[in-house]
Length: 244
Image 1 (tube, one colour):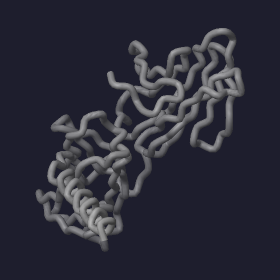
Image 2: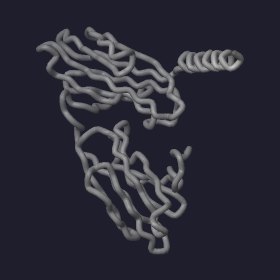
Image 3: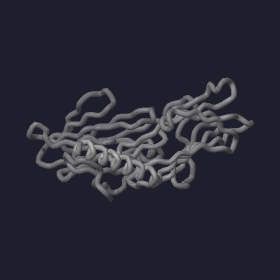
Image 4: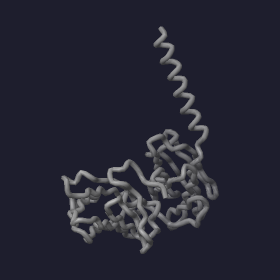
């Protein structure tokens, strides 16, 4: 009987904690209809049991939430542009916890005649998607070996091109036209390549930035783009992104 009471108390505590985190949710996603000619916009998101909303010109749909403990929170939505039986559409990720280290942001997605635009925290909207299109322009990721002592670097990315062995100073580069996350694994030799790290090498939220370059060094994995000074982002075998 005592054990049963303890279980009930623990369940009640868990429920309270869960509700507490929901009440503190600060991240907001907004979807706006900025089409023309009185066109309706139909939106459906992966949250709220996939409820469908019809938005008139100037109307918006929004929802708020808090990231879960694992930091793997993400939401996707679908926009359908009327009329013509809503045949013009696009499905995409509206929020992913990997996009930012800040727990409170506002992601605003705007449906316009020529495509879907994105703005974060009031910044100038940038076109991210064509209607029914893939990524607007080609992208690329570069991985470079700057280890020491003639160590090999083994890289494998989620692009079906298999494994690549890089000598000191060598680079591996791959291009793509989609608008999704691309992960890579770096493994540092020798010793059976036991020191390694898997990470997100490309994030669509940064699609308008210069192409990313990831550099393997003795003390960790560094990131740079557009000739900027490389910044250390990961430890070898580390659990997550380092703070700036």
